[in-house]
Image 1 (spheres, rainbow, N blue to C red):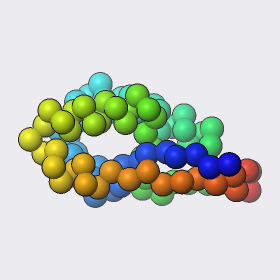
Image 2: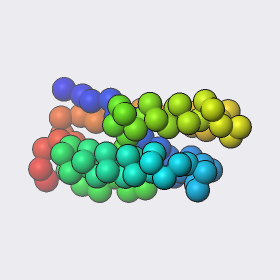
Image 3: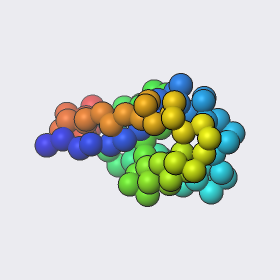
Length: 88
């Protein structure tokens, strides 16, 4: 089994920085924590995982933002395997 979980790379997070509205930041932070608590067997490092709602909110914000073009090119969706879901 594999899950596709979109995440923000550190360079994207740096690039959009403080421009992201507070409501989206709060959604992303809460959902990232829930995803890591539920699915991660270890630290995600610098990655910020996005729920469906957070991913859509980021994309909608980017679509309306003048900084959107470089950011859209860097959004990634890595795959987690069953081994990633099992306790260490």
